[in-house]
Image (cartoon, rainbow, N blue to C red):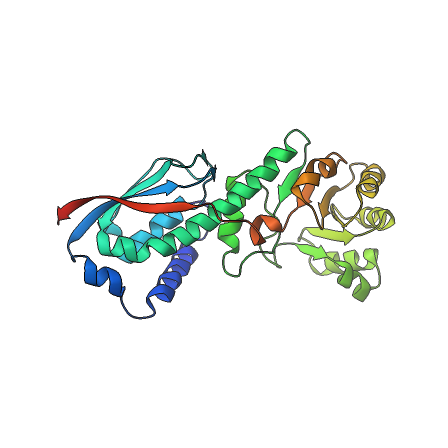
Length: 288
């Protein structure tokens, strides 16, 4: 699993997800229909084309549900791989009851993260050659932010800040409260001298004011393409520029070609459709 992820946190998340399914009880269907000692082989199979992310998370779900020593797993592809419908992504062997008990939790996470990676890959492909990168936002599902941002990285996207403590993003309401762009920037810099600062602006003049105040990263909020191009010319490499607000894939390249450095796209995480993946029992190994 990506070194940036806190594995203990992921384990806690998985345990909570499994408990949600079991609600303190048992899987009545699997318990009634499957012998306690039965073991099976199962394949995780892509049902559609896309980019995979979260295989190790899915494996972790199975290991926690069944016991780490009872599961054997072999991944045929790595996270970040482009796959076709019908491809086997991972093969696991373990206690049949526990495999089926954990199946939906494992697939919920794997399909969602692979959906985020698949959508991100489309944006990355659209921006290829422009010099601009697509970035995620904090518009993530509660408690899934680290995993969703991991999926974005798997597909070649770039992460924005992970939390409110990582970096400052001075938005329009902060500017109003502080009395201006420069005033807001100075207030943050004075109190948190080592924290990266990004300033959101919606006019070219404010972009110039932000860079003159010392901002190294400026978010151009809902700017028309021509204004973005003017902002790029006015800032002239003195700060990184990020386009944000209402961005769509069909307009992505035109936005990137204005010369901005980043496109911030909340849809990567809040609107990504899942990648259809199934877990299919392949055969029984017999009694253990």
